[in-house]
Length: 211
Image 1 (cartoon, rainbow, N blue to C red):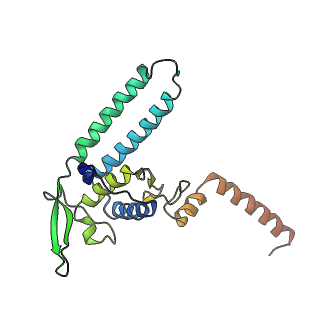
Image 2: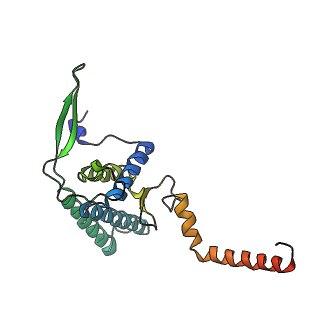
Image 3: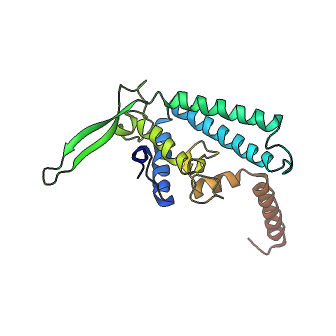
């Protein structure tokens, strides 16, 4: 066993990621997030998009030619800069293992991660937010790391209604079925369907078929 492996986060299943992602989305909706958390989410999205673009471009390079060219090198440099920026930002999160309690019936000690210093600013709770959710953004920052490490952070999305949600399936586009129905009612397709329905209804009503 490599002793340094204890620094790595344990693997999480999709079911665990879905629970964590749903809690993270709930926290974002309850507090509005912090500038640090929102900036990291935007930055992760930018890194992921550029990395995909770089991988796609690299596949187009000739197998007989060099492994990279000016364009791919420029993409790599941009990726390095974005990753360095991500590291600088998340390094503001200084934590330590806090001994919370002892289990007197066994030799186990209970720890949790806590911030070294107080939150940068108090979070303002939104409607119906639980007070504990507004203490700090440590859980959110740890969620970003944990979800991103195993490729699940891309499933955290923002609904057109401005609420956050964690995708259950890749085709999910809305935070709820109610929101999906509401957005569909605003679409041109629905309006055209509604106009056609009313036109047929009016015709039947004028003919006396319906009252």
